Image 1 (tube, rainbow, N blue to C red):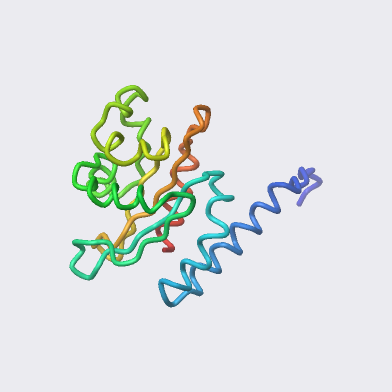
Image 2: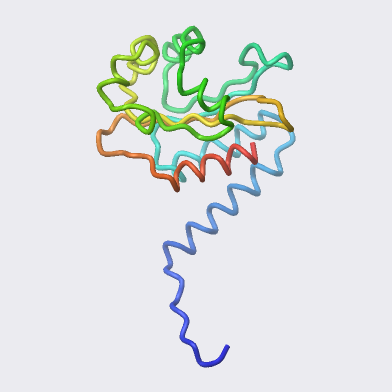
Length: 171
């Protein structure tokens, strides 16, 4: 370097980068869904600052959920969501685009709260902010990653969406 001064890396940024690397290593070292769950559960919510989150793996035919990981949501929500999946526009859009989809990026909050999938499932925990990301292997959708919050001021950013896509790519 030719005398240029370099700003020191803030401690919070360095700690965050180390935590992200540790998280990624834990996910990539997993060889079963149970190991993946153990690596995922304690870290993803803190990474995203999302109180409700999880992922699921579809059965080999891609028709039903074979393994579900759900943090801070009830069994009632999971049962309602499984029944409501067929009319979940977030799931449909994420599968169609292969990208992370944020509900409030698709529609205003009042429209979300009037949607059938919100009334049938997401309202169970007042999920105002929801991100859905497909998990893809090759060119096949094998599951989904999701996170949610009910706080009115928790908006998921473009950076959050890119981070969820990166995590889904490792799952």
